Length: 433
Image (cartoon, rainbow, N blue to C red):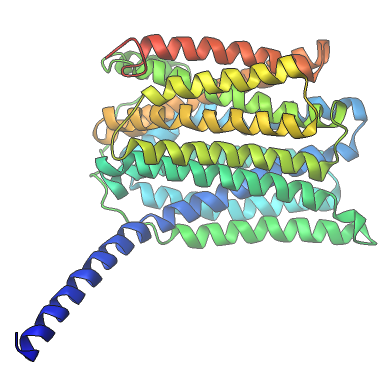
């Protein structure tokens, strides 16, 4: 072969190699704006929620701690219950990228309100900001998850959903840990005002960065529908979409499974505040660290589920996840473990919860076609947050009448029941093809 021929072959191979590399990089980079936007929003949301659990309780009597945690959780979910129809309508009739960007812009003044509440030590102002964050999250949630299919296509649903949820729970991890760390900064600062300044600056900065990240979201979306006749009545909306979802086998049971996932997760999160202090004698920072590890466990489980699925929807993982959750929670109930063993078991529980969740999300996005996905996601959100609201009530009753250990017993029985229903009713999870 001549020198020119040799060089031509080498150049051709180099071009092919670079072309493949650039294609891979482009595939990864197209997800970055959405993932980073979601990361900043969830981080800020959970930072605020954790600060309420650690900082605001110091403004009230000790007996009010469990009540405050429950009220904060309820305020976060009320918008999802009553305004999800509006969120579904927005995702159906308007560009989803624009909805996300406007929602992220609104987060900046919301965090200014939260900062004002902390500076004034005013629980009512902080709770207003918590409610507004719930409202903001509600209105762009169907757009945020519905846009996954627009970015990655059907083949990217499992990866996009798994990675999105992993990033979500990593953000929960950091938000929870950061909240515990900031609440303990008074050990290092001579004046409380310095802690408050750090707290307020972080909340506002995260909101600004999240808005800038959202400006990079530019997918090829399906055309919006004009003037859809969807009901905006929060009581009729779930009835309509429950009936519509019956035409897709297993879809309503998928909504039920996701609702139970969040009910269980909410109860675990609320219970850790109490259990870690009363049974394990841990500080705020240590409690935040365990909660962060739980978020890591869920995130890793979500990512593993996305990787295992490999461009497919594998609902078998739902059953595997449910069984793993049951075994881990049973271990906590039977062993009554020390800090180390408890941490291991609760993280294992979280990992299998991630395996349980992702196939359900992917199943929904795969089976629902076109712009109908927006209202279905809104219907799912509404049911999820009804379940979370119930979790706040269940937690308050059980913890008030018994103790935090009995809350874990309740979680065990709910997990067993949910796993059995999923096995019997969701196609591919067990009994149904």
